Length: 190
Image (tube, rainbow, N blue to C red; front, side, top):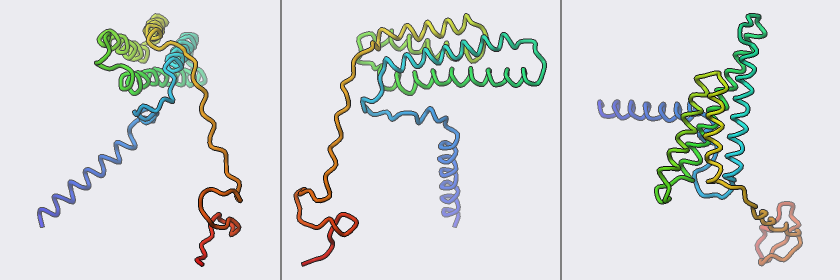
């Protein structure tokens, strides 16, 4: 009886843990699969991080303009800008860790250590951007992101292949049956 209770308790703990992980992990962790799908454009990811840094810059500028204000609307805006700054810094961290470090930086590269240091510098700078509200910190973040650009140059993408054309309902496609029964297949037997 004790073995059944212990097993049930362990199963309940495992189930609770899985549910907690699924609920508590940020959506960014699920942002993109970690298989070589070829969908993401590395250069575009770098440009998106630069845009995120520009958003953080805007937040710092707005926070400085609101500093010292004590009316409710100003306080509300301060909270919103701080949250926005945090969100965009976290997006940068997630892009580096969930995408670049898992899929683009690997030990087989001749300059692996240099790449690793530069990508890690972006994570550290984004963390500092969360902790501070000064433009020098944002400038540092922007510079660390720009330092990655040579690794991910812009390039032309091949256009996606045209999807297979839809087949007409009465087309011959390799087997005999009618297509007039309302759902595309004849289930009658001869």
